[in-house]
Image (tube, rainbow, N blue to C red):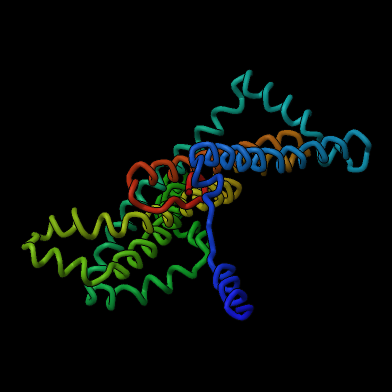
Length: 290
């Protein structure tokens, strides 16, 4: 009898009961708390670094003539913006980035789609493009200067060439990775070439393409700033390089902050656009996932 009782207790102990947690009971509240925590961390880390920088300058731990305090940089940036001295450089950089990004994205997506769909085109062009991809893009600036002369042409062409390779690679890889069953289903239903693109290739490849486009957005800002330091008479890159040569370190940091803000905003806009265009795709961040 004792043996039977022990067996019943053992069987009862083996039963697992899973109770719903806060994430299941209150998904909206949990989601809001998660987003609040993520936003707090995203703001707290840079804020602490800025406060540490301000403290180091105030306590003379660093030479504020070389590394001005954040308050000094902010005041100088405000004065230059109020006087209208900052906006021409910001606009010059922005219009070069937008023009080059549009050209590079359109050409990279078109060629990536073509090469991903047609194996013969891919076999003919991929070795050449792979060889060009590994060439540092700033090394192409002298060639663009010879082609377009001084002015906006070389800057826009350099950004377009940089963006092109990121979008081309992501597009071609995305199209090649589309399951064959998707294409077979389209053919079974008698889809035309346009319908195959509209209802199969585009929805299946667009999330990966937009990830490449978002990466290209940040890289485009980096490239244009480096290019403006070499061959431009205006722009944020020129402002940074010129102010450093004149030992105006506060102005130099104003330019660096503007570049950082421009890069973050541009990248976030591309990410938001990607969310709107691909609501069916998993989000690239953990926010809002339950």
